[in-house]
Length: 119
Image 1 (cartoon, rainbow, N blue to C red):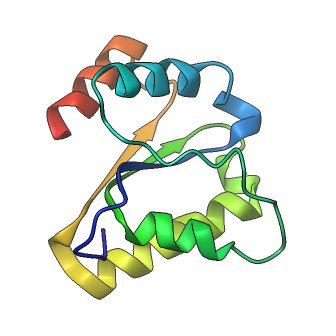
Image 2: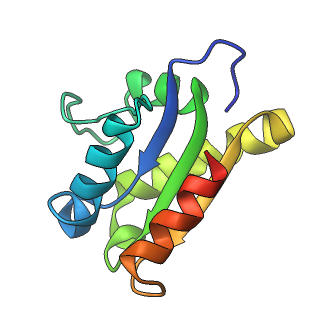
């Protein structure tokens, strides 16, 4: 989004408590199948401040996909990611795309169609 050197094609921002084992697992499987590189946060330690690896992943991704779910806004970690995504977007304008998905508003198939059109 903010860097000319791309580390990942997609940076997903999501509440793991809500969607890690459901929607996200299907999305990641499909992205992997299409050979689209995705940042995966499974190895990052949670802390009060946003990890440097996370900032680097956000800034080095072509697209950020923010998945709003029931608990997204109540997660301080998600809000810190979102703030970094917005700062990056404001800092560098249209060098990267940000897509916002709201679960529950569309079917799984419609959500996938909208996302694939953007990749």
